[in-house]
Amino acid sequence: MDLPSLPARSASGGTVRPGRRSALVASESELRALRAEVAHSARVAVDLEASGMFAYCARICTVQIAAEGTFAAIDALSVPLESLRDLLGERGPVKIVHDVAFDARLLAESSIELGNVHDTALAAHMLGRTGTGLAALLASELGVHIEKGLQQHDWRVRPIDDAMLSYLASDVVHLEDLERVLWDEVTAKGIVCEVLEETRYRLASAISAAGKPPEEPPYLRVRGAGQLAERELAVLRVVADLREREALHRDVPPYKVAPNEALIAIARTRPTTSSDVGRIRGISLSTPAARAFASKLAVAVASAGEVLPEPDRARLERMRTAPVDSRSRRERERHLVSWRRAEAKRRALDEQVVLPGHCLKDAAAVDAANLDDLRRVPGIGEFRIERDGGAILNALRGDKSGG
Image 1 (cartoon, one colour):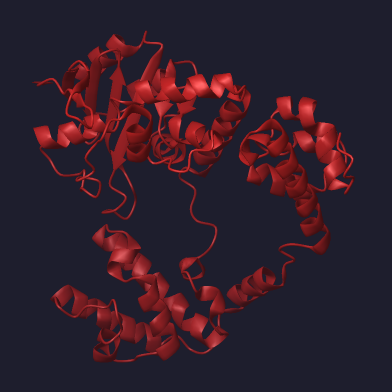
Image 2: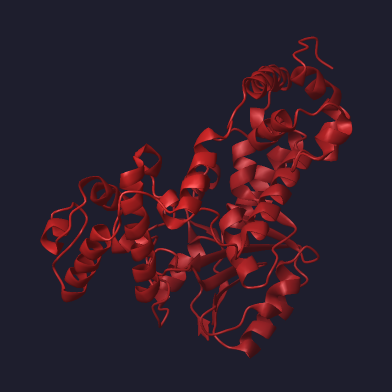
């Protein structure tokens, strides 16, 4: 369905780009037409909105695309997205995305691997910008101010009206201009390889994580769990599992059932009646469903016992006794940090451009002894091996003389 043009406005209210042709795409035929229209564009701006603040498992609700004067919001709850694979994949045009990891993970869970990306948030970070949020960058780089009034909107709500469409447009129609400004500076500073390598690393990490269950059980993912005694963890284990099942049943994020702080308080105080549970901050007794859940929590606490099951005890012991950071590893990290700081100052670049933090930690962890060892560090890039490999190895050995 065609909708009115959506002009971009500057801080003074002046139009900074002519109004775009805009559409809400809600059928497969409309999606095919959009794909054909933008497939030959050199650069396509992409954003999405999901239900993560409102559902147990985040699901893509809309995908926004802007290219060469066209803006479209795809209703992902009505239209399968599979036909976007080629457009959004590695062989498609350059995709301009702001902060790629979240979008890449959700698209991967829809069987779409995002590729060939310019990430405006990452580019700004590597250029040393202090504010890398989209609104902050649009204001500082383009003088464009966007409204964020629907930032916490439930994007499962239908129909999508003009106000919602305007908000969806604001997050994507300026990305082409923002990318040009930032990419010109990235190119001038000679850090294109660094930005693209880090983008590929973040894409690969996000795609790899898509659909994988968390490694830790629910109670060990509760912030503050590591500070509890075993008898308290025994309680936390059963109430965290109960919260997880309740969240799945209600199709809401677990924190909306009960906040982490409430679970920690329950683990410490061990309330065994629903009224006692209701005195815990963050636990409500205001509705029949809330009172029923509080009653379930009280029963779970009463049945928790004093110790963890043996498999969990062994797992926890391994976690607590594992040498997270050996003395020699910390020493290697310090040497690398010192080298990176000096190199960044010498080259007048951000330290993350010289060597991203994850590369620094991984190189120190594997105790790289040669260039082939360094090549196994994810995200380091062959260009860094060729340029800085010797210096990195020397730094790991504590040699302050450089390359």
